[in-house]
Length: 175
Image 1 (tube, rainbow, N blue to C red):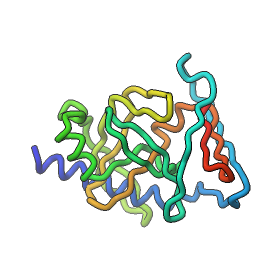
Image 2 (image 1 turned 135 degrees about the vertical axis):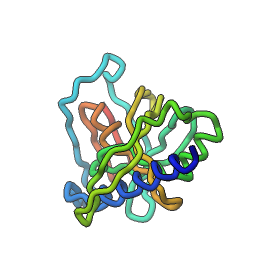
Image 3 (image 1 turned 30 degrees about the vertical axis):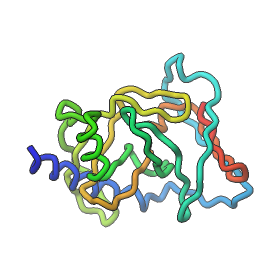
């Protein structure tokens, strides 16, 4: 069981590496804001604005997120296909009883930045809370690397119709 878990986490790391060098990033100045729109169908609970304070750290923006009841700060990453957590966070969630073997969905192949294909583990996060919004049953990947960053990717972000980042006020608005 532990060997399979480690393999799942290692595969997820490769996904993380491929997402961090995505070509979909746009450089903006600190005085600009950008808006990202999605056409995904949203449920009634997603109506209205959800303004969240973000903090800049090392050139990236961190957004407070609650995963299965546990507070974590994620890097806001529109280039990541899924929420990505490291094996350290996965093990912590397991020890807290908020991530179980039933949440492991299997493995999936991912293309990493150098073009090679690697296998990664896919999990189900029962709840992902961003501000006052709670998303249910969000797919995520586990990276087999203890120092891998936490990425808030498209498996959560695409459930919002519009995302606006206000760099001047360090806020993100999800609608």
